[in-house]
Image: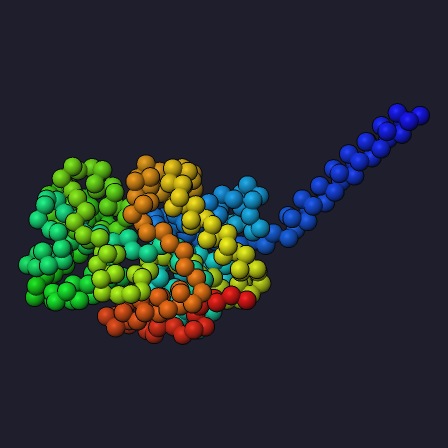
Length: 325
């Protein structure tokens, strides 16, 4: 009789346990808010990749429905129309979106800092002063790289059109091809294009790290990629919990380069072989709150003074920044 009672007790406990687990799993599925989330190929997508993977594995409090795009245009239209909830975009584009939507977009954190470098075929260039009398090949006429580099050169007493000048190409790939073919010897390139060029030519070298040059002129950071979201959506979720997971993802991307590279290949964000070498040069960095507000406001002010349209006409005020609940 005792054995029968013991068996009955064990069976009952198993059934109850399985039922309870099932209920917990169902509750977790119900409670996980859906986040329609976009990243671009390249550096802006690197910090999010572990977050996305964790969501797929059920290790996140959020259900991430990711989109990987090649240009920011797709993100802009989807955020403005409400078809996206959150995204990682270039810092100046976040400001443009804020102005375009009358403040309906907020920035929550950084993804990475500077990713621009001067690459040379040769050994002549070792400082910005060495670029006097030179023509620098670059892509992105009217975009942030042009503005940042011109600002740095002027900060070192070198006037564009007098001491040096640009030769613009349509895309970074075209600039890289011209460099590799020998048509040009100096180019302004972003990662991971820098790594791709170095891998293809033993004569190519990184001559100048523009993040270092920026730091010589500014106490605040040069910010490249940021996490943004629709204000209306941010108010519906536990944004602080979201930021904790995003911060963890950024830090893991920096700490575990091999795993990160594999995931970037899995989600078609970047070639994993290139990524493994390029990630340490992408300046992955998480910053939020007041630190973000101070640094990004100063950064956008510099861009605005050079070209106000690059930030959407005006530098956003305090309500642009998510400062916690």
